[in-house]
Amino acid sequence: MHFNDEVDWPDVFGEHISRSSLADPRNPRRSAYVRTMVFLEGGLREIDDQLSGRNTRSRDELAGARLTRGIVLRRAAEVATELPQAMRVGEGAFRDRWPGRGGMANFFMCLVKYTCTAPRWGLFLDYGPRRALAELPKVHAGELELTDLISKIATHDLRMRIRLARYWLFQLSLTIDAKWQAVAMRAYREMLEAYSTRWVPVYEEGLRVLGVQFRPGITPRSLSMMVSAQTSGFAQHVAGAGDDTRENRDLFVASVQSLIYAALDPGDGRGVTEALRGILISR
Image (tube, rainbow, N blue to C red; front, side, top):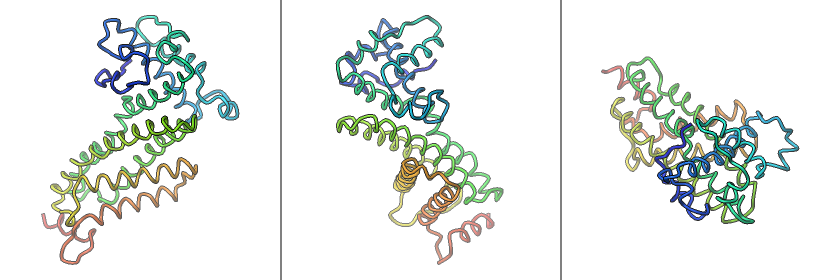
């Protein structure tokens, strides 16, 4: 099992864990670090199961329980069975990391940060840019319309961002503590920034491959941030309202296409689609 040792967990968790050594992968007693990660992975899997409907408990029961210490301990014990060496993850070990009456609140804060950097979210962040770079040559060759490429990637990203928004909406509903909300939203913004950064080289490559340019004042970074913000806002609306319909998805795709096309400078008073076709045909 991979727990992403590249993250500086002692710094990321900060004051939310009792001792930084318990989250340090370089700890000579590495089992202390692994045990910390097992608790967090157990909590993440429980939330994932609750949101996806895979949980065996009823919705009414979950509405009252959500994510208790007992649930975390049970899920952590399941995760521990996947390790090469036996490991106990009982209540004493949990309280050692997140002690006192605020232990669960501090655990939630660490869980949000762990969620941001979990390897599965790295795959989510990389999918769209990787797919776009791979398919841009098809657009250049006339085998794929740019509109269709935007549609496929935007639909996938919206679906994943809705799921991400549900994580945050779910976890923020666990407490009304202002400090918790600030930590969660800061971690959320960091993840969206990482998402935007991945798209900058894609837009740069798109300009080069398709032989087009942006309107004055528009840069790959500014467009990336605008699309990311638009996706984030739409996803949070859908996650909060539970209105994930085909009509809404089509509306979102059209809005992303319009935003990207509006950023391009077709020149000579032509429409963007006409200009793109003209550029590609003339090659």
